[in-house]
Length: 425
Image 1 (cartoon, helix red, strand yellow):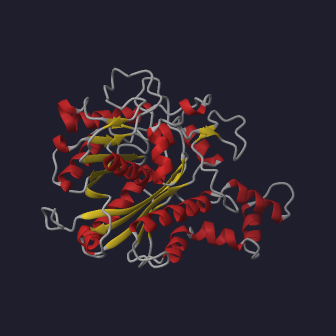
Image 2 (cartoon, rainbow, N blue to C red):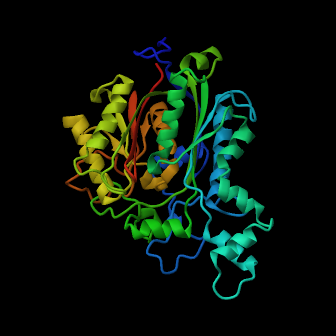
Image 3 (spheres, rainbow, N blue to C red):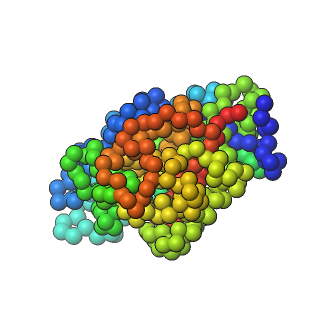
């Protein structure tokens, strides 16, 4: 039996429960079957009009109903569902009494056009509606739910109350690395002995007109609208941008000793975490790739492993020309001669880019790859890019024995997180 502490004497952190929702569906089983079968969850947007927009597709989660649709409302509902799945699988505590803190990755909470238009209509103003008009009507009591939702960003507090987590919930927003950051915070809390268990969640429902327009103005989105399933093309020479998507992932983390003591099923180990900031640019990576390289090396050092120990890389792999190139530069530097032969696939080819939730969702898929001995494919890989000689597990899932995997998350604003995930000895 493996030791319950690592080489530095820190508690080993185990995963005992997982829950996931993506554009492919709800639950581990549904997602894993679709992902490894090469199914795409990308579809035309029907939630709002897209006339005049260059991008009209996304990986939406329209099958989860919510009242008063908004990004925080759907984000919270998805988080509730994945937490229920994860806590049930872990069989820890009970719903309403989780024995540890909540670490939440959540997109910025801001009022959307639907709510702004409702306020404007209620103001009774004719002609131009001023900011003072909106403040006046918002303060009359009829819009208290808006006040609570958008002023205080109550998602974390609501989840903590519903599931009975301990202490104040910690919500983080580090762009596309947020899910990985939340996992790292949970790992560190257990390693420091502050808790024996932690609930980690990444959730994002940001497919709304403003977000779509913002990313489009950055020329970051794919405009391959027809057919939608072909739009996300990581590592392919004809890649042109990422596809926005929604989703959520939850993991129950525990000290390995605590999980074993209560007879829990160990799904995998979070072996190492690396985080390095890149201040080069708000959206671009440093051209020399040093922050990405350091991020992966830090994670391997934290895990006490070498590049030769890694069997699989769950790539950040967004499908933008810049990101895929920079990830390859980083992998080439870290893995040397193995860079072109180590399997490195992108879940985003099938589910789209779940943004704030991506680190958590893709960590779950990495754990499922280890447990099932199967690597998800990078679909839509029709035109290899000679500048990126990646073994991206093209188009068809591949059986493989994986003992140690890396899951990369590289976000706008220079947020980089790398997780090393391992099998149970």
